[in-house]
Amino acid sequence: MKPILLITSLVLVGCAAQAPDSRLDAVAKSAPPRWAASREAKAGIDTNWISRIGGRRASSMVDEALIANPNMRVAAERVNRAVATAKTAGAAMKPQISAGLDASRQKQNFIGFPIEGGGGVPSSLSSNLGANLIVSWEPDIWGFQRAGTAAKIADAQAEASAYRAARASLAAQVVRAWLALAEANEQIALAQKSDDLLKTTLGIVRDRFTNALTEEGGSAAQFRLAESELASNQAVIAQRTGDREQAIRQLEVLMGRYPKGAIQSADRLPPVPAMPPAGLPSELLLRRPDILEAERRFASSGSLLKQGKLAFYPSFNLTARGGTTTDSLRKIFNSDFGVWSLAGGLSQPIWAGGALRSEYARLKSDDRSNLAKLQRVVMEAFGEVEQALAADRFLAQREQAIQKAYQSSIAASEAAAADYSGGVGDALTLITAQQNQISLAAQLTSLHRLRLDNRVTLHLALGGDYRPSSK
Image (cartoon, rainbow, N blue to C red; front, side, top):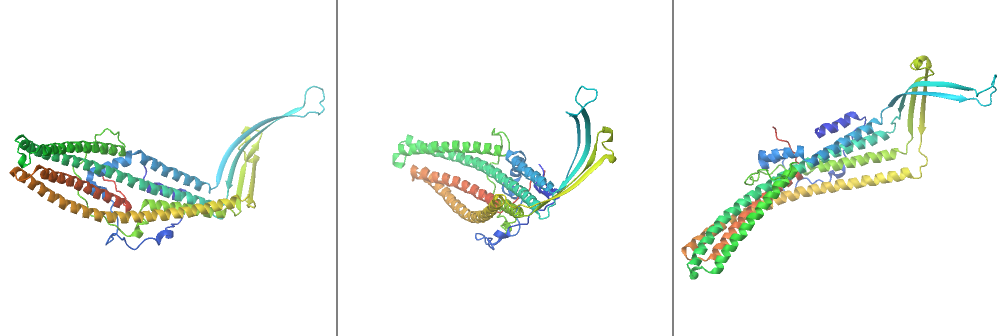
C-alpha cells in the first residue's frame, strides 16, 4: 500500500494543472485565540499517543489492523481511483496523437456504357491503401481545462485526507477495544476477589445462624441476604466474562482476523498518561484530516465554479493530419505519395437552451454547500476538542472523589467485619459495607477506562497523527 503523500504528489507531477489554492481563509476567523477549557496551549502534537496509552502491545495491534483491515484497503483504493481520475483529466489538456493504417478495394460498374464486342457490364477495380498520423489539440487559452483538472487534483487530495482520517479512526477503535478488554479482565479479577470475600462472610453468617445466635445477628434473613449477595456477584462474574469475550472478538475483527477469541490482553488498565499538547485552535485547521478534506472539497467546487464561468468563452481546436495514400502496399510508406492537412476551428456558445446558465447556478449552489460543510466540520472540531478537554478535568475530579470514597469503604468494611467477628455488629451492616466497597472498586475501574477513552478522543480531536512502531 503506497504512502498517501507519495500518491498525491504523483498527481501534481503527472498533470499540467496545479492544485487550487487553500480556501481556509473562509473559516480562519472562526478560530478562537486559545482553548476555553485549557489554561495553556503547547505547540506541536503527539504522534506516539498509542504507545503512550497502551504501550508496545497496543501499537503492534494497531499496525496489524492498518494492514489487514478491509476498510483501510477500500479507503486506499478510493485514493488510487481519485489519483487516476486526476491524471486522466490532466491528459486531456495535452495534444492527442493517433496513427492508423487503412485499406479498401472497390469494384464499380458502368451501366449504360456501350461495349464493343457485346456481352457483360463494364466495370473497374480499384485499391486504396494508406497510413496516417493525426495530431489534435485544443489550446486551453482561458484555463477551462486547467480549472477542471485542478478540481480533480483537489478531490484526490481530499481522498488522501479522508484516508488519514480513516487511519486515525481505526487506530482509535483498536485502542478502545484493547482498553475494553483490559477493563473486562480487571473487572473479572475484582469480581473474583469479591467472590472470595463474600464466601468468607457467608461462612461467618452461616456459623452464627447454625449456632442460633439470633441476639447477635444470626437471623435467617441475614443468612439469606449473604447468600443473595454471593449469587449476585457470581452473576457479575458471568457478565464480565461475557464482556471480555465480546471485546476480544471485536478487537480481532478490527485487526482483520477471524473472531475466534484467541487474543491475549493485559490484565489491568494502563495508567493515564500526561495530557497531550493541545496546540492553538488555529493550528487545528491545518492539522485535522477531516477539516483538510472539507477544505479540499470546497477548493474543488471553487475550481468547478470557475470552469462553469469559462464555459461561456469561445474554444479553439487544431488538427494536423499527415500520411500516404496509394494503390500498392509496397508504396504505403513512400513519401512521394504523401498527403497532409491542417485545420483550425473556433466555437462560441450562443444558445444552448439555458443549459450553461443553469449549470453555472448549480455549481454556485454546490460551492455554497461545500462552504457550509467546511464551517460545520470546523465548528464540530472545535467543539470536540473543548468537550474532551473539559471532560478530562471532570473525570479526573470524579476519579479522585471515588478513590477517596473507595479508601473509606475499605476501612468501613474492615471495621464492620471486626465488629461482627467480635459480636458487637450485625450482618446487615457488614454486607452493606462490603457491597459498597465492591461497587466503588468497579466504579473506579470504569472511571479509569473512561479517562483513557477520553484521552483517545482528545488525540483524535486534536488531529494527532499516528506513527507506526518501528519493527
